[in-house]
Amino acid sequence: MIIGVDLGATKILSGIVAKDGAIVKRVKQPTIKERSPKDIVNRIVMAINDLLKDKSLEAHKIEKIVVAAPGPLSYPDGVIYDTPNLKWGYFPLKEELEKRLQKEVQVEHDATTAALGEYFFGQKKQYKHLLYMTVSSGIGGGIIIDGKPYRGINGGAGEFGHMVVEPKGRICGCGRHGCLEACASGTAIAVKAKKLIENGEGLGIKTYKKEKANITAYEVGLAARNGDPEAINLINETAYYLGSGTSNIINIFNPEIFILGGGVIFGLEDLLLESISKYVHNNVYALHRKNLVIKASELGEDIGLLGCAAMALEQ
Amino acid sequence: MIIGVDLGATKILSGIVAKDGAIVKRVKQPTIKERSPKDIVNRIVMAINDLLKDKSLEAHKIEKIVVAAPGPLSYPDGVIYDTPNLKWGYFPLKEELEKRLQKEVQVEHDATTAALGEYFFGQKKQYKHLLYMTVSSGIGGGIIIDGKPYRGINGGAGEFGHMVVEPKGRICGCGRHGCLEACASGTAIAVKAKKLIENGEGLGIKTYKKEKANITAYEVGLAARNGDPEAINLINETAYYLGSGTSNIINIFNPEIFILGGGVIFGLEDLLLESISKYVHNNVYALHRKNLVIKASELGEDIGLLGCAAMALEQ
Image (cartoon, rainbow over all chains, first blue to last red; front, top):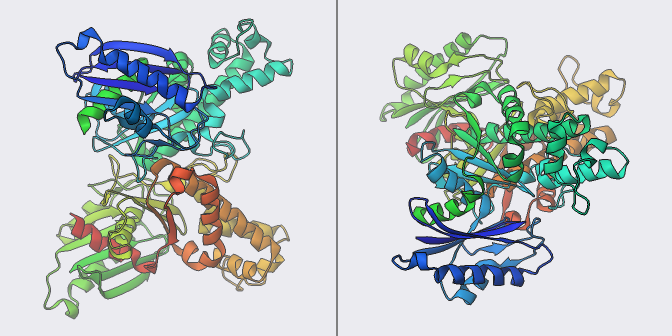
């Protein structure tokens, strides 16, 4: 058994996972952006301590604690560097967690962890070169080469979201203009929809906005499914950027399989996946599309926890 | 000893290379684009047969024949697929060479071969995650991960030139618009200079054009060094695209070292390298630029032949 924690921009998902990928226990808490890193560490420590006392563990030993966190995150020392989606500067996450828990903690990049989860438990080690791209508040990537996570020299590999797809596009959290994340993440869709509404446009999208809530990609999806042309336009633009970015990555890696995940894909799969796939097939080289599989993960939001188990198994 | 052949868009360089990287013999022939694949195969076969009879080989055994060719090129079967820079469609290069020579031939992607040459003989295996980008008629890439060439599932990995950096840019040989190759290769620089001159502009560049010759990146470089503002503008635009593409790749791979090579870099290093390096340092994440080395290869045009030797050693 392992304890896994998936620290995301909107939620912290922690749980107990068996080596076969069975999730024995799962706890979900919101991540509040305004909270300091120390507050978030407190939450993670409390969650882990609760899980360590869980009665489902009575007959079992916890062999590892694995925490997956957003990048850029160094490896193996687990330091967060200017992560745009948590708005944290330099923060030694692994060191803080270990000090508080008095236990060893393996800290891993979230999308790389998810990619390994998909490799082990989604695709059952069928494809040795697997890429995973998560589209949610941000856009991240995980790289599996020859069945192993590729982390780069400092742990920074996989920043698929920080590839410029529109040189004059929106400014990105990383400081560049027109990164894939700035053009096609859930946050980007929401910002564009909000701007339309502020300009007195996007009335079809506004219909779905709940009174005190912010507009999100979810409402844009609802409007698009109901034929609203402005929402369809936003979705098509998103699919174009995701298709273009994915094509770049496929020309570079020539993977066997490219898996998409994250809240935007899970929520808008019916609107996005076919267009992305078609775009890629029309734009990459014949050699690169030969036998290429593009699909959405079937692991849903558990992908991070399963990835933590896979990371523990892999070492 | 090995026989290596580096098949490029403008030249075929063949030679005899010792295991320590000493080039014992070197023969250079032009590649003529209008020639058919069969004609080029004839040239390669003749060159290899001449080298096999070379008297410097009397006391030595040829252990391998390695041919490096432009991508997309499948591995291990060595089939060329729609290679834009040779304008060849599907062509089974390895099969044809082996049939003609009645010997085993290892056919490898040129930029991957050069990257391994740089890893072995340029950087002396000092950096385990090394990327190489060649900027010449086209733009290609080679990926070394953990000291091994990464080829992707079909041999197609490393197409750094076929990443879109300007969505509304020039059409590329691969069919997409605004690929790095279409915006910043030697061919792209020449096309842009030619267009200026056709429009009655670019007089400073035109000064350096030899009467019956086509304008190339070389003349643009001469004009830029002499302060011609249009040439400087073209060079700056090239450096911007190369810097932006390189930044994308560094955010994705987090390599230890990024090596630039190819005719455009070797010829215009004084004009391009510092700008590219500065752009990258200002645009990638702090984690990714930590200890990052960016430099031009010192192996010159021998990088391909040395790569052939490295490929033979690696197997």
